[in-house]
Length: 304
Image: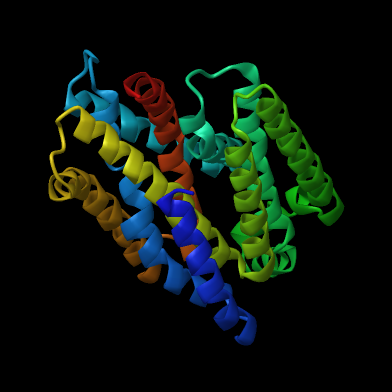
């Protein structure tokens, strides 16, 4: 069991009594509680995309940042023109990215079963998050005009079918890989336990708090450890302090950008809600980040 899994289990059991004993926590309060964790612990895992991607690439740092920002800008325009499509695209990319980060260290190659495991494990995670919190999501869509467009995508029966189907396929692929000894029996059991605990946390916890717990600990913290291990092995980050200095500039730049957008909303220069704005920002950052991390994992396996 790795450190991220242990921390996740510990936080889950520590938080559950407080969450279960508390009254209903409004989404706005959840956002206030969770946003600092997403900003300061979630964003950093993508703050060295330039360092990871520019290895042996004939592209300057300025060119990389320009392309990165152009992709982000195009995705924002896509959200403006086709919000439902952008939302689905975001979920699919996130599903693949979550699954890849969870299982990549087990495999030395990316065969079709591995790729299918990545995507269906991620779909299981996201569909369970949505299905177990549909009542809260419905309230958000009713009270927030921007989110109302997603109502046809959150039908209860359809989400149940997606959850059951993706979960069944995920377990089947994991069992298949265990039988083929591509995934050791111990690792298979640990991953089944982790998946079960994630589903439990999504079932009992409010939408944003449950997602933040998973995203910060099981995803971001795990990826940060992999990035640090890789750069340390390459003698590019000789200490955690040096790694933090590498991560800090773009983390702070991203946080400053989000705060500027929030200020624009507060002073009514931007006619969006904070939650919807944060969704678009995270989606827009995710698009290039998934591509960079896919390249990184190819190199990462080679190093290992």
